[in-house]
Image 1 (tube, rainbow, N blue to C red):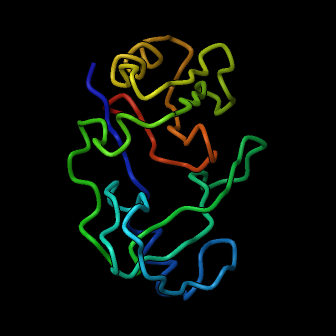
Image 2 (image 1 turned 90 degrees about the vertical axis):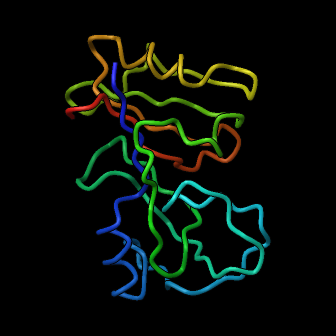
Image 3 (image 1 turned 120 degrees about the vertical axis):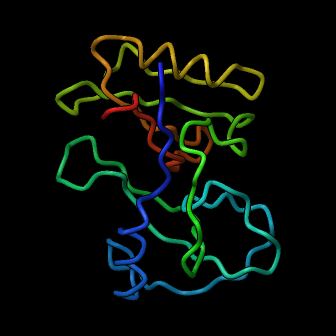
Length: 157
């Protein structure tokens, strides 16, 4: 199975930067990175002293009762994004993660929610969930903070 791992879409980030605020009205402002912050624009760790922004983000683009929004870090200025979309992002391979799957109608597929520990095989878990006929895609989220990490879809979706 071919899988795509997608960071926050660049066009959404570009629109937020141009508006000077995130999609929830919070001011887009620089913040100096301490060097531990996971960036959701490129799925890399921030480098110490680089300009980042803390924004509120939801992967949903339309109203949904499943919509979850929360704080995430991104580069303050445009970056190259995440290019290795066929690979589970290295930064998140050893995190505590919740794989939050959704069915073909966009409803949460509760039977397939999966909690991962750092020692678990994250790629195998993703492949198993996406192989279920009632699962269309999933969101990888922080199990500790609930923050959105990235979108996971079978290629072709």
